[in-house]
Length: 99
Image (cartoon, rainbow, N blue to C red; front, side, top):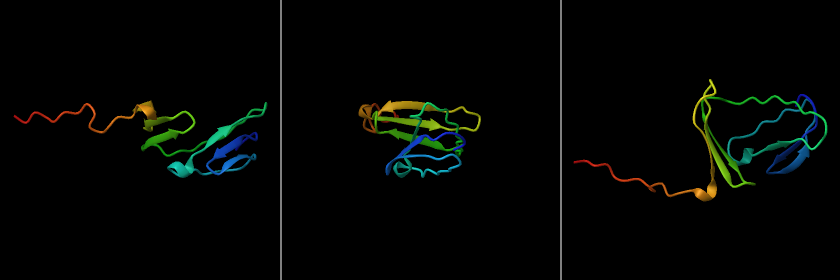
């Protein structure tokens, strides 16, 4: 945290972050997090993330899921879906014509 004192929300609860603090978030549900600024002062933070790997994010508050292909050049697939719209794996699939 470079500047400010935002709130950090994790599965363990919500707490205030301190300037100079660093945090690491695990992959998966145990690494779920949200940074909020409930103050009237600016917050500045540096986020470092690995690129080149797909990123699946679950948004439990809104029931959404995002899938992103994080390429170093910023390109790649980026889609957000409502979890309630999930379909079966075979939905819309037909066997190939082998004749």
